[in-house]
Amino acid sequence: MSGRKREAQCSAFDTAAFNSLRERLDGVDLTRAIYLGRGIQVTAYRAGDWVIRVPRTAAARKKLVRQTRVLQVLAARGLPVPRDAQTAHDADGEVTAGLYRYVPGVPASAARRSPVLTRDLGAFLTALHAVPVEAVRSCCTVLGDLWTDRFRIRWERGRSHLPAAERQWLEEVITLFLASPETASPRLVLIHGDLVEEHVLVGPDGRLAGVIDPSGPRIADPALDFGTLAERFGWEFADAVLASYTGPRDPGFERRARFCANVRPLVTIEAGLRLHSEARLRLGLRRLAERMAEGRESR
Image (cartoon, rainbow, N blue to C red; front, side, top):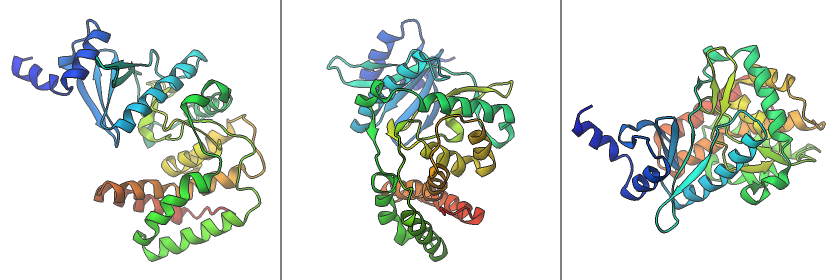
């Protein structure tokens, strides 16, 4: 690799991050860091056997600390999450990056979803939701009510931007759900919160290689994780995962999962509006249309 190329890749990190990472990852050539992707709050790279997540906001720095603690707890309990999660800090103690061991695997695209993957995910979610909340309460946001704490503000911000048919359908979904007697879970658990394709990694044998990057993290209704799966993977896949899930399920569990799947596109729509991202807004509207076409309401 030429000196110019090495120097250009080194610019992926600012001076504070580069120095703190170089000290923490002795022997890892950070100038060869490979760009992995960019989310709303972090930019991710791979250097050697490490994934490095660089925060882009003050909120992201706090979130990385919380996510790191949760990953440490889950790894200690043997769950298939990245190992050696930690944070790097500058001379003033400010978080410059979150890092963990690279998990060999590829995103769970449609072509890589198999019965063995659904069984592995069911076992993962069973174990995740069984983690004692006392072990993670200090680093998690608590969502006591799905509608009030998670989705209402996104509905209020996004409803005027929805096509008429989708807006009317969602109004009916929300009304039906709020009129039901089981809108709240009798138990709150540690959830992943962002079970999307790129966070569910599959090995060459089709098994679950690992689950990365929990959102929040949050203590909430376990049905929220299944709603996320359904929104992103479809109900056939989510139902198969649920069939392998042995955690407790109250009578309203599946109703709340359906509700979460139906309204979760509002999260993407609201982010598109907030970030002035036309692409993100279109993506959220497309996912909402897919949920409407599938027709599983929250009865």
